[in-house]
Image 1 (cartoon, rainbow, N blue to C red):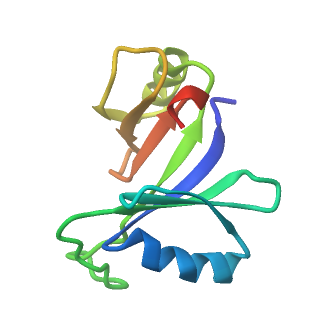
Image 2: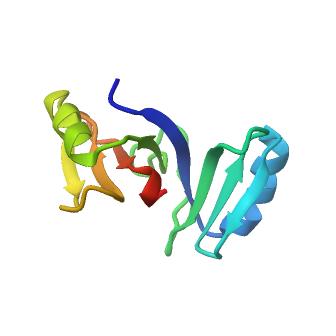
Length: 123
């Protein structure tokens, strides 16, 4: 096992506004709200959905490759260096890295979908 699913991150123009929808849809509670992002938790307090503000947001259109879906997953790991070696061996590509052993790093899967490896200190 490399890590565990930590959150699904959804791009949007207004995290506060969209959070209300997902709170009701998924029976989640708001844990954090910075204006730039909102974190929604499940009943056990585990983060499930993170809504992040994106300037110049363009809404996706179903089945329109010119306007693709805009979300990624965060994968919780204990060691970024170890996990990075494992995801690279699976065919991932590093997009935005850090030489620090804590925090997060951004990758893309073999066909280009972004995902992040994060550590508890970086969450």
